[in-house]
Length: 118
Image 1 (cartoon, rainbow, N blue to C red):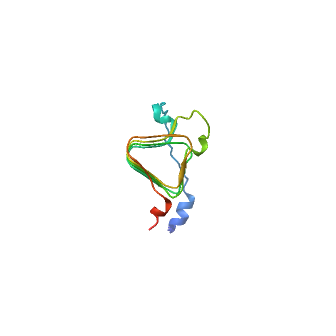
Image 2 (cartoon, one colour):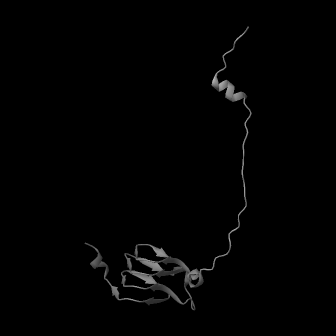
């Protein structure tokens, strides 16, 4: 009677590989965002932007602060874009540009660049 010892690696190499796959198809329905669909960024709360840009429209529900070189609506240069920047609360602007119209619900404050450096 002959006994043989099979190493695990040898055994694993000789076993067939079986793959199981379970698939199902889903379809997402279209969702209408209404007026928010026109905006690149739609923030429900406060928003602080420093040294960056939003190439499309931006809406902020709370307070907004834009400092150290910001741009809003940079790719929307032209007429008829409506409000490019909409802020529901207070707004602080410094050293930047809004390419289009803006609407503010709260107080506006513009700071010179030197006031931001400490």
